[in-house]
Amino acid sequence: MDHSQDNIDQLFQQGLDDYSPTPSPKVWQGVSRGLSWTEFASFNFTNFAHNIYLISVSSVALVGVILTAFLTFSGNPSPELLTTEVIVNQEIPSNPNPVEVSRAATSIPSDSGITSEPDEQANEKQKIRLEKQKQEQITRTELTIMPLTPRAAYQVLEKDTVKRDFWTRTWDKIAGLEGFYRHPGKFSLGLSSGIDKFVQPMGEKINDYTANSNTSQLKVRYENYGFQIETGLMLNKWEDDGLYNANYRDWDTIYSYIRVDYFIPDPTNPDSVVLIKEIVYVCDSVDKSALISASNKYTYLTIPLQFGYKLAEYGRFGVTAWLGGAISFESTRQISSPALPSGARTKVSYIDITPERRTQWFMYNAGLRFDIMLSRRIQLEIEPYYRAYTKPVFTNGNLSNPHSLGINAGLSVKF
Amino acid sequence: MKTGQSNETNMLSFEDLQLIDGCKRGKRQFQNLLYQRYFRKMFAVCLRYSNNQAEAEDILQEAFVKVFKNISSYTGNGSFEGWMKRIMINTSLTQYQKNKRMGTSVDLEVVEPYLTENDEKSEQSGRAVSLNTDQLIGLIQKLPAGYKHVFSMYALDGFTHQEIADSLGININTSKSQLSKARKYLQKEIEKLTENTR
Image: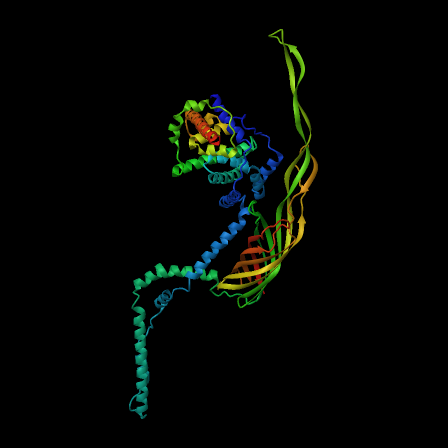
């Protein structure tokens, strides 16, 4: 390598040593999106809780689509098939000629002394009526028997009707179309729990703040002619990282030196000596700082008021759309103390840099409720919803309003 | 990688350990903090291996996703910054191979005739020059892909020729000759720049 080539390398090494260009803020947004997708796509039981809301919403949406398709395309059992079944099972009367019997019964000797004119008229009418009945009987017999030969009837029964009927009857049982009816009560009381994925946009430069929270809800509902009004109490539990700037004192090497302990004559060279030396590290307490976190817990008490309308009902199943508002108050707050890892560190101070959270909120909700009657009174409910908050979660900073997506599942009882 | 050229230390700071731990737990807040800590340095690496800023940003994004996805495999042995840098470089090389297959990147061996002219003159020019960082990055980005990768890996990232040959799937002598050609090419370009600025 010649000198000029060394210079080239050095020129670039020195010139780019502290080079720190700034990429577009969109890069982090892309990274964040990529991570979200990776987390969702690489589902396993360790990240199950992290993706529960996505999985739940996807599952409910899938069930909804299947249910809607099923309700749309599966109507009442096919009338042709039912007719076929009736025809096949219909028994032709053992005495197909009742006319003869009637005639025998009404046949009166002409010499009985009774005037025959009204009798004749009556007989005539009777005859016409019986003829008509006979004609109808023949016509009906022809109509019913003509389309189905015994072989064809057997094939229809075995290969089509019975199969379709099995599924139809099974569905009828599941859907509650066979003898099931809802309790007529208009009030219901329910319990549900779920998960809520909260998103607070933090502006272009910083990634959105997201948090999962668990919800538990007690609700009361009144329903009349498909319209519903609902209220209750809901507890929202958040777990979040508190952030601290920790200033602490730690032992660290401040310099080192080589100490010559003693020397001995060099056995190979009488004019020199061999130094017996040791590297000595000098330590002192050094002030340092670090960013550390601690887990904080918050509980919010929420009172919703929402209005709904039952969009569809089919046997045991129903779908309701609802919207409303809710007011939320912070009820408890557990702040954990941050802790430095064990070692020879001395705590100096912590500066809490956790953004202050809002203690009272108002929000708008909208969602769907998929319900399944498990018995006349008890109903299983699954509710995916969207929630828009009217204020940001953090009180400081000029932030836009957050939103959340969630899903609740629970039971309600009719009264 | 050679250890002398990059002043990286194997000792992780307490803050780094906290951030890595948070990232291993999948906390997005910590991932963001780690990104904020390193994204400029890593972007500088990506810029050296790409043709322009947009391509470098794509590489940076893809590489950071890989970093967070595989951070649990980082055991703490060796420099964390070095580990990240290696991911950036590998992603850049993969991206280059992908573009090459799709025909959007060309292997510019066409500069060969350019290099053979006035070689003696260029080799004698060892005088001190002053270029700003944008000009230096521009010069690297203008290099043909093969030269760019070998030059960046050897001169700036401290790889040995054997490591470069293994990474790029080329012969060790090819790596050496490409480095030499890259230097000559850069010399010529620097001369041009300095002549223009006089």
